[in-house]
Length: 355
Ligand SMILES: NC(=O)c1ccc[n+]([C@@H]2O[C@H](COP(=O)([O-])OP(=O)(O)OC[C@H]3O[C@@H](n4cnc5c(N)ncnc54)[C@H](O)[C@@H]3O)[C@@H](O)[C@H]2O)c1
Image (cartoon, rainbow, N blue to C red; front, side):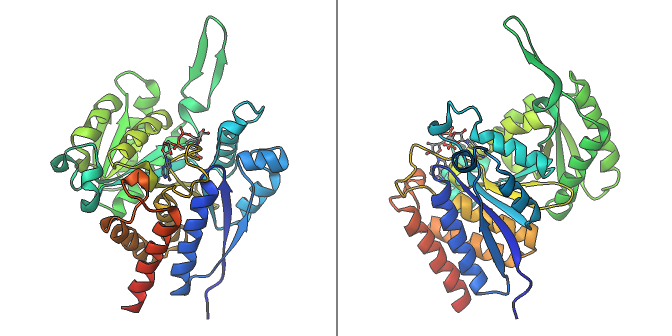
């Protein structure tokens, strides 16, 4: 008998969003056929589609269904169509993170041996890179008050409470405990008061994880270290603003943003899973979007929200095999379509169960 069904709120979004979401869901259906994992999906408008259908990037019906779900699966949102709209699609993202209290954003950066040549870094520097950036997502410079813009002056405020720092530290230390047991704390504590608090709280949380090695780096030094010694890191914990910048730098060293998943988590309630890239309006509708980011996102959801690590592994192995044999979309130097890559990955998945 199949286990109790899991509810997944599906937000296909805009641009290439629906194309790669379809691919991710085909792969999810393929692995679940071979296992006990059983789920239901509910498709909901969000982003530009939310504006078109309900006049709101995060329609009330979408938020209500997301809150009731076990996981939220999002593709990507935005596009030129809404550039001059009074409410922009991207506002929906800030609103859903805040409404679901998703204060931790987790982004893996892994360069496997088969992808080494795609990295802009030299092979001997990038080999073995496998780290995760844990970025605080709902406070810091993007939310602090006061904030204002006048013609001759502007104000932004960085605010962190001890509680906000402590909960993100716990997420990062717990993760390191399950991985390579090393945490890198990023701050600017030689200048910023919030960074001094960040470091104090980090030290008190670290005392509760004696197995985990801790190092501290200033954000400027860290931005250099990500490209000079990326294989040295395991879990990197950063405030919101620094994490926004460092996580894009880290994505770049993998050689393609069309492969990387991410997860946003809170203390309770559903996590939100999404590829790190945008809606790629330049290639939308052409059938050539790289589905691997969405497929890896589905794997991350299975592992983190549904404790289906084995299914996640089967998907990731099928993705690796597909990249290895060159069945990839143009952004990765191939000539295959979204559907062809997806079919190929599903063939590898089916093959893994018929061996
Ligand atoms: N979380 C999100 O939904 C999110 C994130 C970033 C940008 N956006 C929005 O997306 C829109 C486009 O933004 P952008 O062009 O700056 O960034 P983008 O990430 O959409 O695209 C950057 C480049 O990467 C390529 N690319 C991205 N994903 C790809 C994939 N899966 N396969 C192949 N190529 C891929 C695009 O074709 C483009 O050349 C904007 O409206 C922006 O606000 C949304």
